[in-house]
Length: 381
Ligand code: PLP
Image 1 (cartoon, helix red, strand yellow):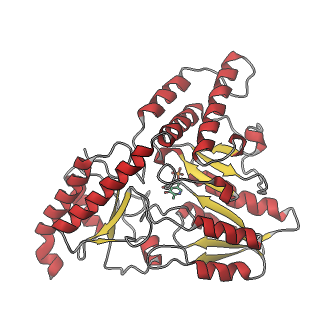
Image 2 (image 1 turned 90 degrees about the horizontal axis):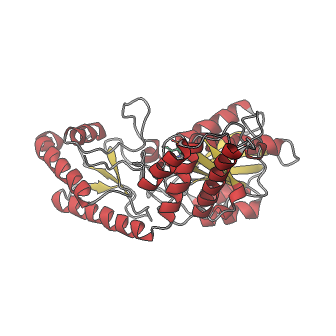
C-alpha cells in the first residue's frame, strides 16, 4: 500500500530492525557492571556516537529521551529552570508560530507557571519562513530570551534560517532551541549552531518512543527526570536499549546515504509536476521557499483536507492533513493559519522517505484526480 506519510512516522529501516533485534537478545542494564551490562552500555554508547554524527556533535552531548516531545520539554523547562538559578534568568520565550505543539504548549505552560516569564510568538511570512525582522526587534528588547525555531516545518517542509537566527541569538545572548525532527536526515544539520537540538527516532526509520536532546557545552540545563543518575544525571531512567540501538542504526544509515536525499527531491518534484499537469488548479503551499526534499503540502481549492485524506485512504494511499493528530480528527492547521492561508484552502501533506518510489507518488496523483472528477461539480459550485 502506498505510504506517503513519512513526516508522521517512517517505516522501520532494515538496519534499525537488525539493531533492535540484536539489542533484544542482550540481557543487561547499561548501568550494571557485569558482562551483560557492559554489552548493553557499549550498544548505547555506539548509538550515541551515531546520532551525534548526524548533527555534527560530540557524542557526550547526546541525551536519549522517549522522543522529541520529551526532548523539547527537557530543553525548554530545563533551560528556564537552570538559568533561574543564575543571575541570567530567562524572562522571554520567543517561539515561532509554526513550532510543533510539543514546543508551543510547553512554552505556554512555562509562561503561565513561571513568574516573570512571558511567551512571545514570532510570526512567519506567507512563505512559512520565520520573520527575521520581527525576531531581530524582539531580541533587542530587554530581558534574556530563549528562542525556539525548528530547522524545517513538519507540515510544509519549509526550511528555516537557522544560521542567521543562531548569529542573532549569539549577538544578543539569547539561548536557542532547534527542533530538528523533520529536517534530520533530509538536510545537513549542525547542533553547534544552537544550545539544544531535539530529534526523534521514528521520523528517521527507527522505532517509535526514542529521541534525543543534543545539548551544547555551555547550555544551562536542569534535569526533569530524577532518579538513578543515568546520562550524567540529566535524564534518569534505564535507557530504552532496543529503541536507542535502532535510533543509532537509522542515523548511521541515513548519514551514509547521500543518494537518498537526491532521489527524494526528484521524486517529490516529479510528484508536484505530475499533479499540476493533471490538476492545474492545485496549489503547493510554501512552494516559493526553500523546502525539505521529501515534503509537499498540497491543496485543491474547494476540496477539504478531510475529504482528500479519506478518499486517498479508500484507495489505499496513506497521507495526512498537515500535522498528525492524536484525536483522529482533522483540525485546522496552526501552521497554515500562521502563513495567512485562507480558511477555505485546506491541504494535505504528502511526505516521502527512504522506501518511497514513483508508484507511491503516482498513486497519490491518480487518487486525487479521481476525487476531483467526482467532486468537481460541487467544488466549482
Ligand atoms: N517535533 C516535530 C516537528 C514533530 O513533527 C514531532 C512529531 O510529530 C515532534 C516534535 C514530537 O516527536 P515525538 O513523536 O518523538 O514525541
